[in-house]
Amino acid sequence: MNKLLITTALGASLVAGSVQAQERVRWQVPMSFASTLTALGDTMPWVADQLRAVSGGNIDLRVAEPGAVVPALSIFENVSEGNIDAGYSWMGYEWGTVPAAALFGATPFGLESVEFLAWMTHHGGQELLEETFHAYNVHPVLCGTISPETAGWFRSEMNTVEDLRGLRFRAAGVGGEIFGEFGMSVTLLPGGELYQALETGNLDGTEFSLPTVDEQLGFYQVADYLYMPGWHQPSTNQFLYVNLDVWNGLEDQTRAMIETTCMAGNAYSIARAEALQGAVITSFEERGTNVRTYSDEQIAAFYDATQTVMGRWSEQDEMFGRVYSSMMDFQAELRPWKEQGYLPRDWQSRIEE
Image 1 (cartoon, rainbow, N blue to C red):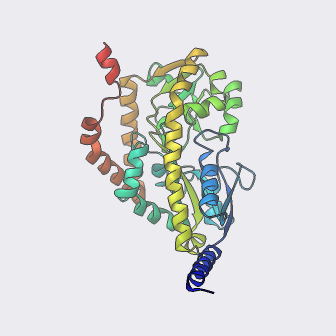
Image 2: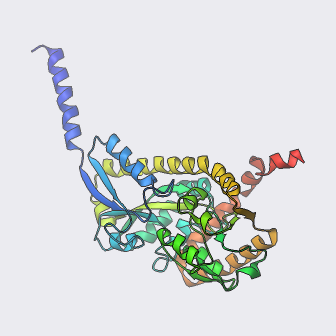
């Protein structure tokens, strides 16, 4: 065999050996959201497909629909206890156990999706995330971020914050506690139960997700009024929860592939979310939904209540206070750029007047 053939054969052998040496991962990944929910539930399946492609099938994350493996709202605790290797959820359902989780999931009057990514990757968010969750034997990987939620679907008109008093309302995370400041009776229900609760009058209103998701769940058929903006969730952030012992046992290459593909998932989800919402809002109006924007007075009241709740929790829980302060410091630092570097959102209507 000549030298060229020997070299070629050796190179092929080394490549084959490298491929064979790559770690094989087989995880079932239960999700909190149905994979059919646009940008909310279909990001993790997309990430799983990309991981199989880039790893040649060696990393195989098999997503499971809500309730198929564990209850939809119990992903965190099952990963923490080692009952499952990994799961995918909105970070906020577990805020009763980990108060700071609510901030990573969505912070009222807080960071929007791109700002949240900036804070996570360049302003200490990732370090605070790991410090918060490693204590519970969980390693979360940010793996999906979407545009603001709608602020609420209601069966009747909400002209002032006084109209909220006494209403039965579904909300999640710290936003739910803020709604409670207005005398609302707040409960947490999975998305699949909300249509019937609104239809039967067991709920007077609900918030859940993007307009596209709200449409898929049929809220426009059972609630006549849609309110925006989504002050309570300027971004909605989903995470791949991995048991910390399992994560630490992975090879560096595997961890890097998961992290990089999840970062691609963040770009995929925010692009998909932004691409679809305008047309859906128009379709709501065409089908008779009363689309409303909260007044400046209502938004100011929501902001004041947010300061009360955030202050209370920052005093009660040290990590909550640290995470919130870090976010607000970055938001203040970013403000000159955000206010002066971008066109105002209503610039077009201003010049057309």
